[in-house]
Length: 247
Length: 372
Image (cartoon, rainbow over all chains, first blue to last red; front, side, top):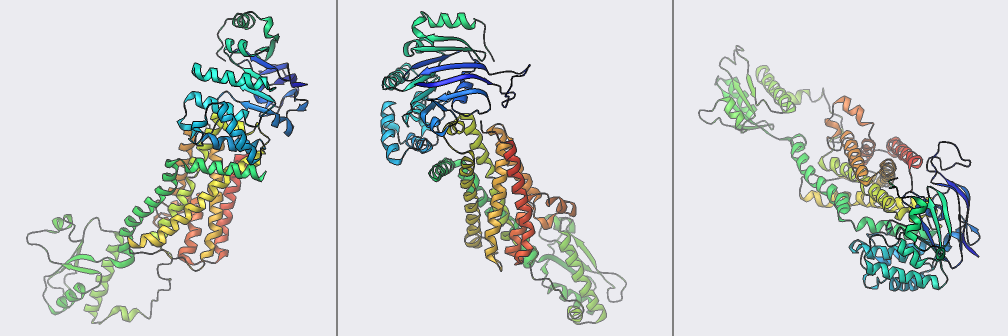
């Protein structure tokens, strides 16, 4: 079964309600399609401003007014059950720094519909997986950048989602934390969780992912198997150009 | 749904209460303002309410029977604290020393009506005192000249004061306790808008919406803690005013005839202040902008509304302008309880204005607010 199915999605921040495309409008995504099979580790790559984060927001139903369709395990992404299937670690570290790791996990656990016992059990597991057990009762404001990233991931993993969306999960972390995150992700993927990874680190994508979608200026420029690409960085630059992207 | 609300509510409260600056702003600031400004206003109003004596030098240059009688009457009057002029000090130096505020000279030829009584005032003396001293001197001079023993007793049946004693003029605690409690309640807009914008900026708020969470539930869970804190702010300030301040100041805060009226007033004032907070959160784009907007709004509304400068001291134009401030309506509603013992029907229009303010704030915020 397909974990994620995106068909002809068009979205603009100028006119979010746009049901029809209109001339002169800037589109963050234009007739964008993508598929991720169940259990796949999929890389979503693109230069700055390509539309990756917008796509993540569309999948997680933060942005609602778009043209096209998005399905999560066969259900429309607005469906409550579809949202429960998603675990999302956004690009900015989105944790409550005035709360402890445990309190953050409890809050998001309740939002994800977990029972109290499940929250207790799963919190212990994800804290262990992300190496935060010793700091579970400390407020996140004292965490290092790497620890915050790991907590960001722990929250996404808490409700054992079937589809994990990761938006640059290793930005600004040291090699030790990065390696820890890689190992955690590989373990989770091996256990059957589908993962979509947005990253600018080509080595990371090539090491972890089996399939790849290359996105630029809101459209797909490549979609295929990672094994078909010899040097991902070179391939990326060939497909998206060498010019600087400041938008 | 209730579980989600409960968790979001607890989250909001924890974040708010773990911020020491917020606690200082919401609880310590108004308590300190009430303490210091009650003492300051107390010193100022004590003269008016208790009746300060005017330090006065009385010089009798006539030394005639009528002049002597007038001198004695002046010296023994309750408004006068008689002082002797130090040797070699003229009036200017006397006033500069602040030891004397008035000099009364009964000149030679007073009995014959050749020369009038002369009065010199310290140039900085309050106009009210000046008028009181002049009125007193007029009465006493008329008594001496006309041979009347007690003019006040003669006119007592002609003029009767019907005002309830001190019922229109709040004492320092009646002024500052509700005033600064309301002021602080409006300051809730600062943490409220900052936390909202910070959560929007750091992505925690958008992240909540990646779960099946109702936006109205999130809104409600964000509002209720601030609403409750507002009520606690008022209760705390009230307790400080009633039980602590009387140890430091010679005034007390009365519950008024209908203390239960405080409940609907406080509930509606808290709705208005929370509404103001939501509006600031919706209008501001950054936490820095929101703190400036909220503080400026609260200070201006407080200044116009009669908290910083008491309403009864304001000129007529300012009194009219004060009505534009919700703080004015809130303050007057509380004064209706503490001071005037007013019926609920008197308070109701003020509550209607505050409710209108809250509704407008929530409506505008609802139209403007962006969750992402």
